[in-house]
Figure 1 (cartoon, rainbow, N blue to C red):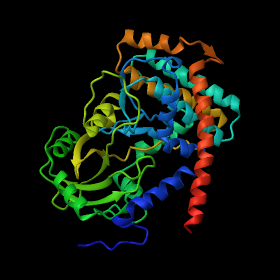
Figure 2: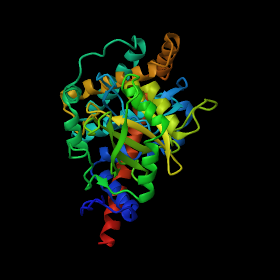
Figure 3: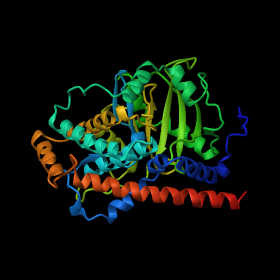
Figure 4: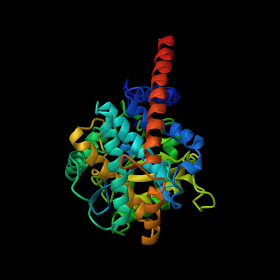
Length: 404
């Protein structure tokens, strides 16, 4: 039956223009929001920096876009929850120092948006590198120290979430259909057909089997699908919410899947390193190295001749919402997240490789307890992003005024 299209939903023919407008709006909300949505500007800055000014890390899988919004609680197929990297669009085999810089800039802009004094930013930078170095020296299976308030709150929410809460948060309806509106838009006919085909794809069925502890489900039924208005830097790419019914004649066991287009990474990668040529496969492989809880519930596929990666959404999957920081919690957050990223990197290194990387990180000397290369990179990028953010707001506001 054809769905009635509510006013808030955008028809496919108007989709690209509407997504462009939404992206500008999101990035204009704050300098911190601009940093989260302007990863391309970060890579432009990296290209302008002399390679010798940054430590050269071992060739490992990195996030490539390691900002606050890309970290958070992640669940695994058995129901365990951990704070891990949760977005791998830009993952490559690259220099792990790039993840530290990107996270440091994100923390610094969050501190500025919270009206914290500059000395707190300096303390956060020192805490970030301290947590990272500590992670490199630890057993990667060991527990992290006590969580900051912001992290404890996110974990508490994540561990208590249920399917009905996920449905209400994501699709605003616990029944087996996706309500079109502000967040979900109608599909093109060819998109619907392509999603129907992919739901019969062996890779997706293998993924569902993996999620059910190796037991092949008796039935996997496509219940509904819609274009998903989500993210910021990825707006304009294919993104679908797909609702499946698993092993139930009445479709009562629901699973919500995220289908997202994978494009060539802008993040710089190490030369002579072997990575999957298909971008969907690259994202899945990076996730399995950096965030196993997430990576083991992902698969790659193709839709309309474009590479996509697929993951099941669990109730426990949440972003770390740290748009504001308290002075009391700021350095603890920085240190804790430094350890999270450090453990994701260290898990790919031997003890001797991790020790060598620790030495290299500090080789350029110290400034106010943080390596000079890290501090100057963050200061430079905060200034660059502040200018770019104001210019973005001016151009977008003036351009919008001319069309209204």
